Image 1 (tube, rainbow, N blue to C red):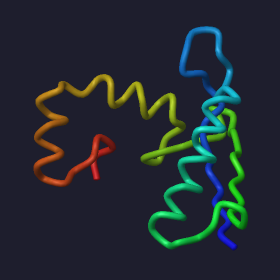
Image 2: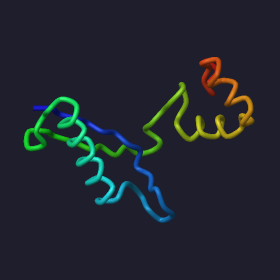
Image 3: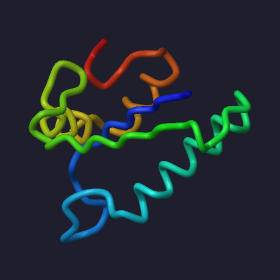
Length: 94
């Protein structure tokens, strides 16, 4: 009986949208259930999927609130980002 918890930030993917739409959530639930069936032969009827939406200010990455992290990443020139991918470094300087 698989249990999958998906956590996403509560922000829209389109202007004026404040979170994932019901259609997007349904697609996530179906996609995860289908993947568990395909890979582990787990029937969708016994698969539980829970989607938690977290306010953006409650989400962090790279030691920073996500908005600060995004600003930091946006300030890094594209060529530096590509070099980091080749060396395994991250935008947060790890």
